[in-house]
Length: 304
Ligand SMILES: Nc1ncnc2c1ncn2[C@@H]1O[C@H](COP(=O)(O)OP(=O)(O)OP(=O)(O)O)[C@@H](O)[C@H]1O
Image (cartoon, rainbow, N blue to C red; front, side, top):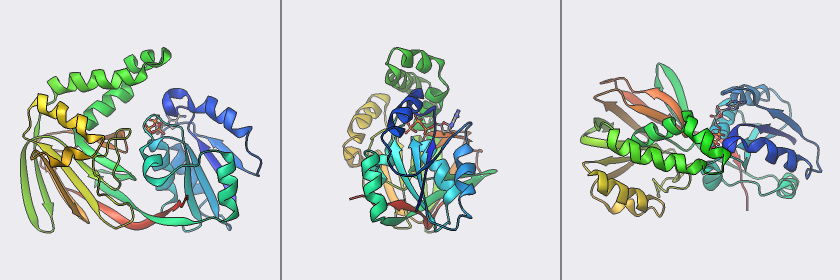
């Protein structure tokens, strides 16, 4: 089996490159490595291995965005196996699918490679968007996108306080966010939610760097889970946020959850969206968008 590292030098607030230079010195087996040069590059790199005549272990050295891009490029290719070294800021992929701890654990894996088939979520709205972990509309997406673009975050990163930017944007967005109306169809049932803060479609439990937004999600069952937070005051929303890390937010009446193979979502206004924490444009008011999952579309490494 060929081993290829795909490194996003910008991941982990720019710390991934330094980590990679340290990490590569510890590798004592043959490997290839490629640094990504622009957003979307990891998809192109992964796709180039699809015609390989042998099995290829693609190891994403980065965060959730990097892993999503690799999986989009590798989806449907039975010879490509995906693993990760968690080098991002949030690393929800690593929490859900596992991650290699060090070079020795990769070497160990290569002696007896095991894999697991996993689902891939997607929706189309002009462009096609895929997600490995989750895709959200609303409050969470607005914060994530603002933080990703933030100059303040870059400045705070220089002094090691990058995470602080996230909390500042949570507070700011709490006061500026315009709630929306969400219409959702699942299995021919129609639900209408008023005063919605966020709707997140999940393929695995974690999101936003360790929040257990969808505790019952399984990434290999052909199903997605929808979480809607609605009809809740600003103050109580903060309280709910505090409980998401343990997954106990689902006990609040204002948090609705359901499971299904497809959700059709419509918002009454243009609302920010993310896929695995990266910008996925705005929803188009009153347009029906189908969120679905492709069953067992990619292979993750199975770690003990
Ligand atoms: N060379 C590059 N220059 C700028 N952006 C890049 C480059 N290579 C990849 N990217 C983009 O960087 C984005 C962020 O990467 P990634 O999500 O892996 O790191 P992170 O945001 O630190 O981690 P996490 O998502 O786990 O919080 C990716 O979505 C990818 O499109």
